[in-house]
Image (cartoon, rainbow, N blue to C red; front, side):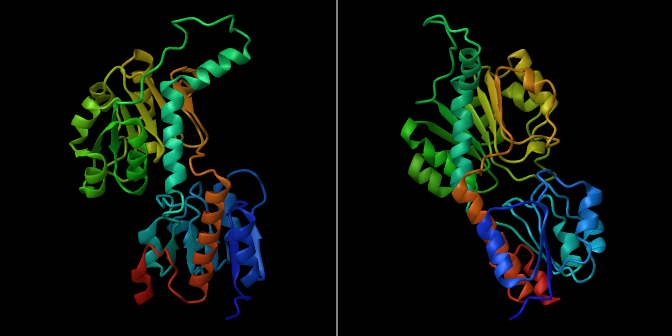
Length: 329
């Protein structure tokens, strides 16, 4: 089937194999080559008249934008596993397919959660800055004391694909695993002896708390002043899920007051902005949303998003369709 007449817009440069798939099937592929997040005005202007849209999680794809694009818009193929940036009900109402890229970034994100856990507990960034400032004048028994990891208790909040992968990687460290989730994870219980507990108990008992929940109304500011007060003063918090599940101001207060020992963050409440006090804190490790940033993972995401888009434009059911009810319209 020839797709030559269709127009597609890609909101940011993605790995070349993804673009190759699009260009193999389409003659009118436009890519935003500017290395910055598009303003709302640019996004509305650049998507006008497109049949397919391949955005990143940084773009808000709502009813206004869909209407501005036009009635010919057929599919929005998100270059992400999360899709809270897209108003799926609005898309369904307009008969627009929405897809995502699940599964491919599970291990990369889980690996990075562990990266943050280790970096925070063992004060890696702090000590790196110390060395670069040429302050090291010899070994000392009290220098950069951190927290033990082996044999401690790991609390997983949200035991879906990524949360479960983080938990499974704890086996080499002989950790006690607790998890909080709406559903029972029999694999974790069988393989690790993990226990499903209430959120509050997990906070109270864990030495490390790792967040892996989707952004929903019920999870917005799940980690707030009360949550951090329930945690051990020696505990560490890691977030590689979505920024707004954390009340960033509350986290700052907890870190400043010593309510918790440290935090490792890859996502932020008002991304790309970060709470100004966070960057001043030595007991916070902050990274720019790079949990899935491996060559292999980002390439798989790009090819998956491109394949979803092409299949949708062909009139087929895309492999990762989030709103299959549109096919009945």
